[in-house]
Length: 173
Image 1 (cartoon, rainbow, N blue to C red):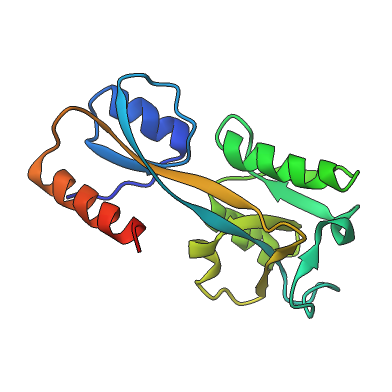
Image 2: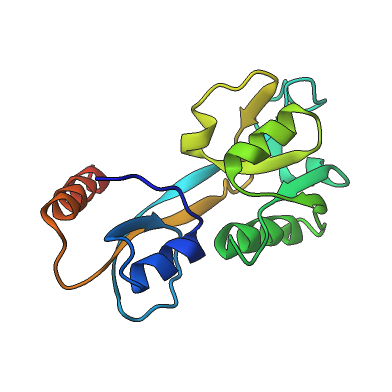
C-alpha cells in the first residue's frame, strides 16, 4: 500500500482514471463512477499565531475575526472548506479578509507561525503541535468538514478492502 497526499479534486480525478484504488477526501464528488462511504465530519479549528491577541482565549468567536488577515484554500481545490468558512463569516454579517490562498494545510500552519494570518485546519492537523501556533475552537457553531472514502467499484484489491473495513469499523465508534 502506498500513501499519496492529494487535494480532493485530484484524488477524485485519479480514482476515476484508475490511477489509485481508494481515496479519503472531502465531498461532494462529481464523478458518478465512484462508490462513496460517508464518514463523520471532521471538526475545524482556528490556527493563530501563539502571540496573537486572541490566542489566550479558550474559544474564538467569528465576530472577533473581523478585519483579521485570513488564509484559505482556493475554492477550486477545497470548495467544501471554502464555502463553509465564507458562510461562517456571512452568518455574522462580515467577510473574511483573505490575504493569501494556500494549500495544503501544513503550509497554512507554517504561514500562521510566520504571522501571515489565521486559518482553519482539521482536527487531525490541530493535534500536531507546531511551535508558534495555537489552535482554538470557534463559536457559536464550530465548523466541520465532510469526509468520505471513495473508490472505483465494484471490487477493491485486498489491501484496499481491508482499509475500507477498518475505516468502516472506526467510523461506527
